[in-house]
Each structure stands twice: as C-alpha cells, then as structure tokens.
Length: 113
Length: 118
Image: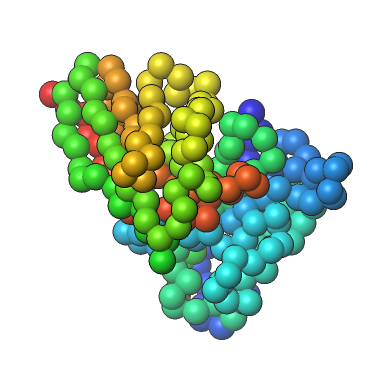
C-alpha cells in the first residue's frame, strides 16, 4: 500500500496569511503513460463531509476558489492556500489516486487565529 | 444537482451486522462507481472499496475483506454496504462517495455514524 505522510498535523494562522501543507507519498504518483501525478486534496469543515478541492496534483475542481493551489510531482506535493479566510477553517487531507488500495494522509488541521 | 443520501445512524451490538444505504440522484447512476470510506478519530480516512454500479463488480481494500459487503440496486439508484461481525473497532462514520475513472471522490454523502456497543 502507498503510505501518505502529511505535515504539519496542525497549524494556526491569521486571516490574510499564506498556508502551505505538505504531503509525501511512499511511492511515486507520476504516471509514465501520461506524465500526470495522481494526487488529490480534500477539505473537511467541522461537522461536514470532505469536499474535493484538487485532483491530478494541480487541477482545481469546479467552483474551488483560485487561492487554493496544488503543486508537486513524484512523491512530494503541496497545497498552498493564499490569503487565508476565516471560512478556510477545516481539516485538509491528501489522497493518492494512483493505485489500489486508495490511501489518505492523516490530515492537517487549519485554525484561524 | 448531484446528491448522495445516506441512511441514519446505527447502534449495534458486538457480533451483529448493519446495512447502510446510499441513494444517488442528480446524475446517471451507472456512469460512476460508488466507494465507501471509513472515518475515525484515530485512523483518519480509510478506503473500504468500490462497487461498479453498472455491473455490480467490486473492489475491496484487503483490510476490509470479510468485514464489508458492497451491493447495488440499479432500479433505485442505491448502493449498500453491509458490515458484519461488528466489534467496537467498527465504530466510525462511514461515507459513500462518487468515484470516476481517475479514482478520486468528487461527491460525498453526509456520512452514517455506526456505534458498536453492548
């Protein structure tokens, strides 16, 4: 199974700041066939189910604000949230969608100061 | 709009089984697979498996083979997951989620809480 390691486990920032969340996979998520990285990011607000933010490492899902940016390749990936807003208070998870069994990172809790 | 409606919370005794449902609407049911995901405070999010809503074919995470059984009723656009031989470790929120060919989950149900207690 591919192990996904996220860091940090939690962080607290003030509104307007930029946040970086890291995700590392135990195997490369880069497909040699199409040169795409199979990594997704989800946002889970308190009391809600997860919501897809980004897939294929950097493709934003429809309706997701452009302050959410996914980047990275191979085994190292980053979710950047620029100009964080109060509504971004949530847990964030990465997920590899490269191979079965699909696996998730352990999550990053974002708090707003 | 796409919606996944899940059945209500379950309180079950150790050794028993529960069957939870996920009713889809707002899209062509058989065009996407339905996956199931377990969420606990300690283990985070765990992929259980998926069901091909057209053929009924399944894929299970080895960890959940023998624990979870996935079925589908195309006529009602509903997917089901049965959890058997329940133990307290099965206490969790279980989500159904829509999955496309690229293996990420683009819509999630609201979750069903299962509590296993004597």
